Image (cartoon, rainbow, N blue to C red):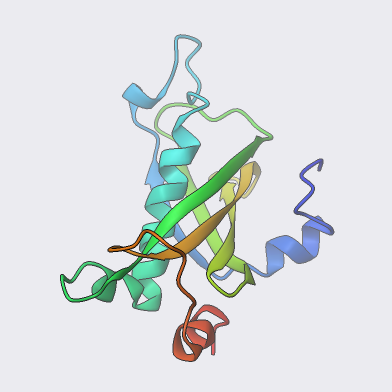
Length: 148
């Protein structure tokens, strides 16, 4: 494993609790028949939104009176195994680090044989919709992100 955000693969994998499934669509494959290299980023987005909904965040973020929203600051993917049309993948998400205004989310994609296909990480920053400036997580939000 060459991803610098993974110190010990076994421990890192065991820390994931939340996942959602995706089925590889034909339109997501390239002329060689395997998953196009851009598609995992869409899977990360889908899984990230499902994870945040699971934590109860998206309900508040989508109302007009709430001024704080999450935005992606960076995102990376490390490819380990080819993925093909019609495979079902489990996309795992966890909050690896919680900062003052940001969270570092880690992603893990496994196929039906429980093999790791790709991994990733990305920083999500909470900003104020009106100012566009980073805004801190409150204590309740931090507790939820820490799984408490």
